[in-house]
Image (tube, rainbow, N blue to C red):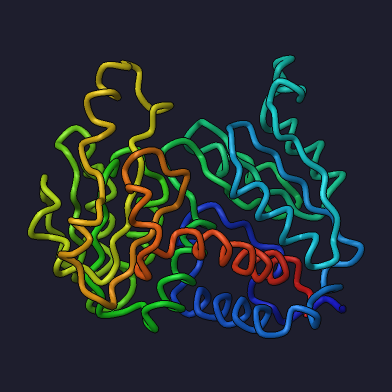
Length: 314
């Protein structure tokens, strides 16, 4: 397939959820749906293109879904999945690593434990950088996946009550998604977390500045689940804690069980960026409202649309 010079995504970095407008997100979601309807039509879209995945932090879904997306588009991949096997273990700077890898690949997906690493990489890269997660700050491609899931199962991205539950302080998927949804009309947010894991004030201020949205903070799930159109569960992230006692105390603070699920609307959906630890009981998996594994599968389609658009293939 040929390069599309009129493509608004061509050559762009994607490091922050606000890098794309609502209209641009919609265009990507439309393309993801088109790929889902006719995958054969896109099977050679990225033939001759090479994707590099640089993961300096553990990942299963994000890394594999990007690699699967590129392979399904007919492209090829090179990968670093263990930072100990890269020159970062020898003390090489991130800027130098990016400059080097950019000479091998057409596009780079990177995950890094330090906040702001993706932005730094974008400053030094001559090829597009996609943020696969930087510390506790952002995870914009998970947001693309989440928006796709919500639109596919709820039919819209506006006029929704979205409840975020669990670790909202360190949950980078929450930080990205809530900003993208705040750009849409008439969305309401319910933030359910213990005081220690509340959404950072900086993110809350950013959300409020994006639109006239209602934000409520609660410490209990009870009474909040019944109004949710979307329940977005998150795990308490052990790797973000310096004190293991604090992690143990908070990890089971909220657990979604079948009994709690009875409070929810019949057409609501339960989402989770995964991996799950103990915050969703396995008995919930059988409920039709539990869509987190479908969410993971939709992530491949969303990332196929993103890669194809940034590389400018039609």
